Length: 193
Picture 1 (spheres, rainbow, N blue to C red):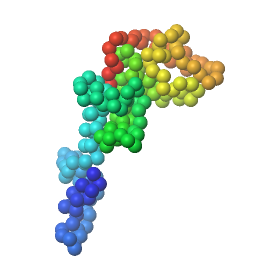
Picture 2 (cartoon, helix red, strand yellow):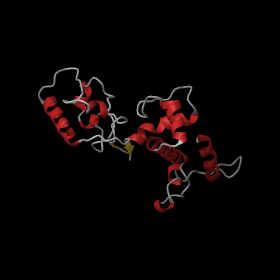
Picture 3 (cartoon, rainbow, N blue to C red):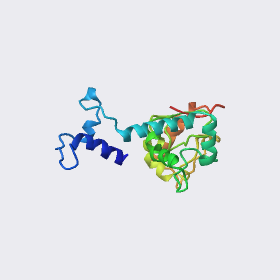
């Protein structure tokens, strides 16, 4: 993309091999849509992130052959939120892993069976994850990657802390437990929206 942007910018800023033009505007302005005062040249980085995010969305919510193949090859028994890029992975998968965190931060999960949604680290009951709403509790939780299904499988909630809850932390935990009172798991898959 950097090489493509280099050649595209040369079109605007260089008249021939020997004589250079002055740059009268930043490349970001050139890539701004026309209705916002730019020239409307596509920003390849933004377009690439959007297309890769679309693939991630389809991977999370669909069940076609290609999605099953990617799940079998890269996810195995893990969820998308658990996997990281490995050096032996394809360039396509590497691109997906580069945009994964930003993609996940811009949406939330509609809870189904709770097997794909991390209780503290994914957005599902609120627009933001519980770890950002209750950072003090998150810091003392033993299993930060616990899934909603496993946490809600027991009463009281299946969460262990590194130390006893007292004072503000205890009150905060009671607020979290109260939030879970109306949560119902279904037999459907979790969906990302």
